[in-house]
Image (cartoon, rainbow, N blue to C red):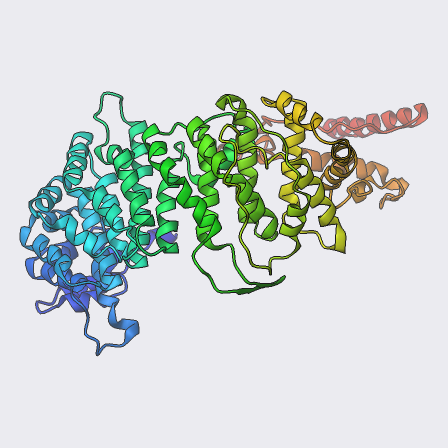
Amino acid sequence: MFWKFDLHTTSHIDQLLDREDVTLRELMEEEDVLQECKAQNRRLLLFLSQDHSMQELVNLITEEPSSDLEEKTRFKFPNIACELLTSDVTLINDKLGGDESLLEKLYHFLEQDPPLNPLLASFFSKTIGNLIARKTEQVISFLRKKHNFIGLVLNHLDASAMMDLLLRLISCVEPAPLRQEVLTWLNEEQLIQRLTELMQTERDEERQSNASQTLCDIIRLSRDQANQMPEAMEPDPLLTVLESEENVARLLKSMFEGEKSEASIVNGTQVLLTLLESRRSGLEGLMELYSQGCERSYTVSGSILRAIEPHLKDFQQLLLDPPKKSAILTTVGVLEQPLGNARLHVARLVASLLQTSDHSVCQELCRLNTMDLLLDLFFKYTWNNFLHFQVELCVASILNHSAHTGLQIPTLQNHDEKAVQGSESQKEEGTPGQDSNADPAHTPIHDALVVNVITTAFSAGAEGGTRRGNMGHLTRIANTVVQNLEKGQVQSQISDLIKELPEDCRGRWESFVGQTLRETNRRNTVDLVSTHNLHSSSEDDDMESPFPNDLSIQQAFSDYQIQQMTANFVDQFGFNDEEFSEHDENINATFDRIAEINFNIDADDNSVSACRCMCQAYINSYFILDEL
């Protein structure tokens, strides 16, 4: 058989290792060198762990290859060297982590002037990260002796590999006491403060983006690990600094000081959004809260909200005067003044702040008329569904949290002209209006519940034959208002406000709810493909049987066979292998199992009698033969 033959082929690497003058480059040329290394080829591992081999491997991942080489093969050996060093082989890990000269050579890579080669930076980060996970105590002890380690890493933060290295220091250190020591060391090095300083507007965008992403990841990692740790453990010092009012204020200062930069605003707002998360990722968490009716409030540190509140006017100004952007060509025409990423992030921030249901923050948003501006943008940018979703979340949050805040919903205002003008075209430039004399006792709900805005927008959306891009979200907003009018925490407030409307407006709203909205909801629930008349061909009553009537008995037997062909049919029928081996020569062997077939055949009495006579005659013939 196949397994009787030794088909194992000797690796060519073993043949190369038989030579005394074999070089590391020759071994790395072999296609199966990584496979043999991970398969614990003892001879190969002994060769790789020699001092000269380890020195050469480290040189390959830290020194720029010659520019004379072809581009497609220039980083071949550095890549293979990195894979060998991070192959998670104990012998290589022990050699690399225990030899300080090799660690010094690796560390020297950070002492180069920026920018680093991104590929070499990734090889370096992967190698050090593997050592942090496998030789934790030795590597951490070595790095803590280097007083400028954090400064060098941040100096090269324009390379995303350095961001990964910082995150490994936070997430891959075990056991817990050693991890706490590392966090304390990073805090003493003022890691968070130095990352926040990189968010300043004069920094290059790549460095700002990586600093922002690093802060966001640190927040999520620290919160996740804090939830998994016992309560007796010390608090995470990095998370404590991140959530402090002083640090949030420093972040906001770096965003708004100097020249207004969209990159700085967006990256800084992403950190604020992460701080406002309730142990969930941003969009997923907001969707979960929306699906639950926004009944659960965020558990957000009050220091974060107190630091953000004085800067709400700065975010308001961004809605009025965003960073300048050139016109863009869209499928619906030229957009002279795009919404921009900065204003979209401000909308996301407002939605997250409203989720907190903080009384003071809601008062300030109301005083600034922030919802006025967001609704104006909602109707102006009719094709920006990212914005529409955030405005919808704001409305849902306000409706569900107004009762908790203890605020009153003010009188509905008439926005007939505003709704139409804001939704007519995205080609017109201009900024939404702002009422600086708004009553601070009012919640930001007053424009979210404007009946005329909804009814007028639906009327405008039905004209011209083209359905506008915000109509789906507007329908959901209208349904939210109706649901809260029927039952909700602010039912009585909404009902009173609608009763205070002029008679024509109130009649228009009632007509809209009873006819337009109901019809829209009905259309939205209709199946795109009707399945009423679709059925299997086997269910067709007119289908004639392919079998003639005189073959009905054969068909009954065939159906029986098909029904009995189950997965264990073979095990329940006939002999098994042991029975064959035991009774090869015994013709009188008994059956352990008898297959029985039952099916009904219609027959009259005469047929039954004739059958019995034939069977008896057949049996008697055997007795006659035995007597002879």
